[in-house]
Amino acid sequence: MAGGMNRGSSRPSLGERAADSGVPAAPTAPPPRAVPPRAREDGTGRHCWVHTPPGTSGTVPGLLVEWRQQPEGWQGRVAYAVPGPHGPVLVEAWLPAASLEQR
Image (cartoon, rainbow, N blue to C red; front, side, top):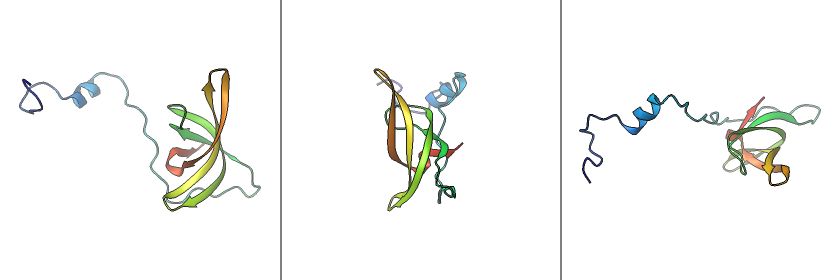
């Protein structure tokens, strides 16, 4: 293939062209937390942002119900809504702490 993967070309790389396109980069999830925030004393849930949850893309609002520590790290039990064929669908799931952000 002519040109191939050689860097000798004077053309900008794909990364450089993407940066020059003016299209903003996709948001990244926040860095993982070593320890999750403390639970509320009254036992009520906490509002949070859920980054790229299963069933949808982007960030959606959620309700953090509880934390648990697993061998692979902390997980939060959250409830959030995703679009369904007949309207919003409520999802409850255990997700890694890295995909959750306090609101």
